[in-house]
Amino acid sequence: MGETITPMPSPPKSRKTRDTPAKPARNNRKRKPINLALQGGGTHGAFTWGVLDRLLEEDCFTIEGISGTSAGAMNAAVLANGLAKGGINEARQALHDFWRRVADAARFSPFRPSLLDHWFKLGGIDYSPSYHLMELSSRIASPYQTGPKDHNPLRKILQQSLDCEALHECTAVKLFVCATDVLSGKIKVFDNTEVSIDALLASACLPHLFQAVKIGGRHYWDGGFMGNPPIYPLIYNCDSRDVLIVQINPMNIPSLPKSPQAILDRVNTLSFNSSLVREMRAIAFVTRMIEAGFDDGGRLKRMFIHTIDAETQLAKLGAASKYNVDWDFLQGLFELGRRQATRFLRQHYDSVGRASSTDIVAKFL
Picture (cartoon, rainbow, N blue to C red):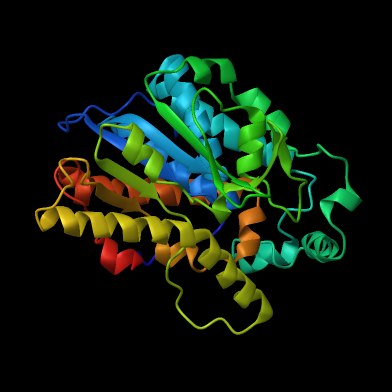
């Protein structure tokens, strides 16, 4: 856990996980059913891409349901779409292609590290003048004053990456995408039959950058405000009791934030973890009731919670790094995700189906 993320060079062509995914590794681990809950957090979602790539490569889980928010929702949709259309190899390639398109589309965007950012190798874009200009302008004028209604560059990327009709017809994987209803303040979860490009854009709609996404007469913002990611759809709609949360917003930070930027960074992680903490408190409460012998006539369901994160490494990155779309940076996060997934498989695979490998109270409460 002591590794430090630094931008990494593009991988050599011999690494098939980047261009042509390798065949799934054959191992002695049997396939176990599991649900995935993928947190949102901007381009830190490339960490989740690495986790998913490693899990798919190992081929030791049957994914029943996937819940996702923001970047987690996009990873979830691309993964489900790939599995539905062609299986594991298709899913790995689709995830690679999605993140490659994100990097390619942003080559001339303001969200690029400056020479100073490259020099200090902090992973963010803190020294990018265009980034700070964007931040300043977003505090002076809203997206309703500064831009056209539909100018989200992710729309084209998602259109190239997804076949929504295939998702609507998919029965092998249950997909749940979270957004926030702006006017009611309620969570909205889109399932397989409802998922669309607009639903995914709604799940990732940052209100200081984009106008609210209108779907069915309702207006939506980023799902991270109300569910990041939501766990309850997996509890109510899936048979598997195991939920593996891929968490990219650190719970803990090493020191008290004192600068304006550090304070804003901590506010960001606290707000985007708050809904997850609430759900974990409810799951811990139900677990205690079941352990005490009360399961409400069998209606209460014991859940096994697992997590893959990179608390130490991601805590060193500021919120600005969530906008960094430099391919080398994304590759660094990808590699970190693969390492953390390998560690999880080595240490906790045997717990899946039997018990939680995460101490909910210690980690979340």
